Structure formats: C-alpha cells, structure tokens
Length: 250
Image (cartoon, rainbow, N blue to C red; front, side, top):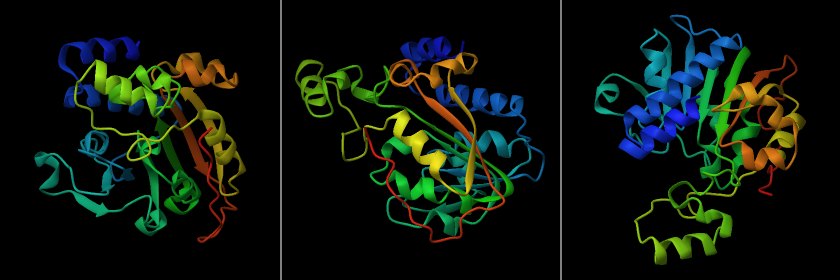
C-alpha cells in the first residue's frame, strides 16, 4: 500500500524529491487504470506545480506539459526548457491558462483562501473530452495540519500554538495564511453543483481500493488521508464568467 511506503520513506528521508515522485507515479498509474491516456503529445497542465515533479513524470512520457504556479519553483533540470505560466489562484483567472486534455492539481486546494475560484474554472481549463485530476489533504485526516500534525486536531489556532511551545520545530504552514481547513463533503457538493463538469471517481488517494470510505459522510473526513477526484468536462459546460460560489470550509 502506498500510504505505508510514504510513511516509511518520510520517517527515513522526510519529504524529499523521491517522496513526491512516489506520489506522482502512483497517481499516474491509478489514472491510467481508470482510463486516462497519457500519449505522446497529450496536452497537460500541472496546476500548482511546485517543483514540477508530477508534470516532469508526464513530460518524460512525451506529454506536452505546461507548468503553472504563483512562482517558478521548478527544479533546475526542468526549468531550463519548461513552459511555465505564473498564476495566483486566489487572484488570477485560472481559465486564462487555456484548455488542456488533462489537468493535474495535486495538493493545492487546501492552500487556497478562495478555492471556489479554482473549482468554478474547471470547465474552462478542459478540452471537450478533458480530464481534471484534483487531490488535496482534507483537514480532519491524520495529516491535515501538514507540518504540525497531529496537533491540528486541537484546532487551527490552538494546535499550532501548542506545537510551537511543546515541539519547537520550525513549520512553514500557518492556518488561514497558507493552509486552510478544507473538508471533503462541502467540496464534493460544490463540484456536483457545477454545471460544466461531471464527477467520475472519488477515492482516498493513497488506497483507492477502499473507495467505499468516500460514500460515508463524516467517516471519510477522518479516514481519507487525501481525497482524489476525477472530473470530466460536460458538453454543456458553463461559459466563461459563470458565478463561482465558495465551496465552504466546514
């Protein structure tokens, strides 16, 4: 199981490049099992790409990858000849990035103050048969607090305070600044209300064979370490400029 491999790797090496490659390769393999094709020439948007691990794996397969993030954090081996677009997903219009056959948005949603802007733009980012892969770490999962887990179970304010005073290990993520409590139920309800997309799959990212967990409200918030959703664009996708309500946080 991928989750056990990730925990073992994290204990030995932390969140290094190999840690994220494990995640990316497993997600790509799962997407292929669901019917997504990554052919040479497939247009891919790695949205919120970070150092570009996910997109780099797909570019190695011959896909035409566009990397997008608030800043260019691409690794040196990618940055030299990569197509990069700067976009602040809380301020800018994601739809301006164009349309792609596959959009990958991995572990981004929980870092957005206005996630509804991104979700509402999904139809505009996809070609008529395009696929959108969305995954994020839900707040009530064991890793919901990221670098101050499991103290996030004390709340987004008390948890970091206790961490800073008891553990005293530096952390990069701060609730309501660059990490926001994001829950599975409200996000799924928001996605299912969008007129331009159809939800195809919802699974716990690290153990998709237990997809039944995602059909149990409440339980899924705790047992899914990371929620993965596959969406496709409907033929009657909403035109650009459609209203984007917030999916909520609780």
